[in-house]
Picture 1 (cartoon, rainbow, N blue to C red):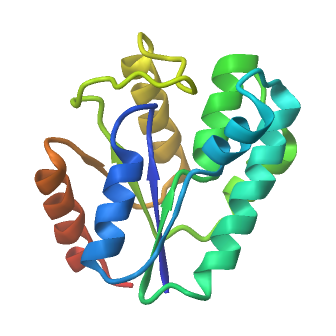
Picture 2 (cartoon, one colour; picture 1 turned 120 degrees about the vertical axis):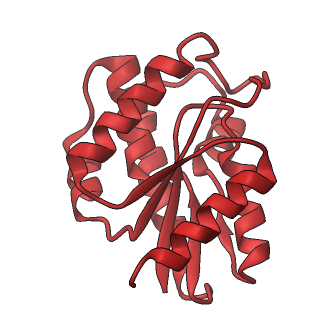
Length: 170
């Protein structure tokens, strides 16, 4: 089973793409735990909540890994939590950084900001998407893990991921 993580700024189609990829490859996807957490506990959060969200996201990924067939698509993971924490609080809990370094991700899919922002009560960075996208690019380059940046409409993004998955030697 190969772990593919969708990452990038808010409102860039990560959830939609993760669901579409899971459908295309007849497998499951792991939704973004922060939405569940913040909808339950409220959108007024602090730095310790990001750690709690990281633990919850890791649990969901591990729980669903045994049910996936060939691919497991995760809508966000430790990289999003690191960037989010550092952007908002100028630091990140060491456990998140450690888990990011130890995670066994086979491919990151960086979702570009070329789709329109869709407001919702949990989103907060509509004006910083380009700045955040650049932070994600730099983080991925520093991690030396395979990644692609996808752009365009959903069909184009699906095709870009499909092409990349066919090129990789797993």
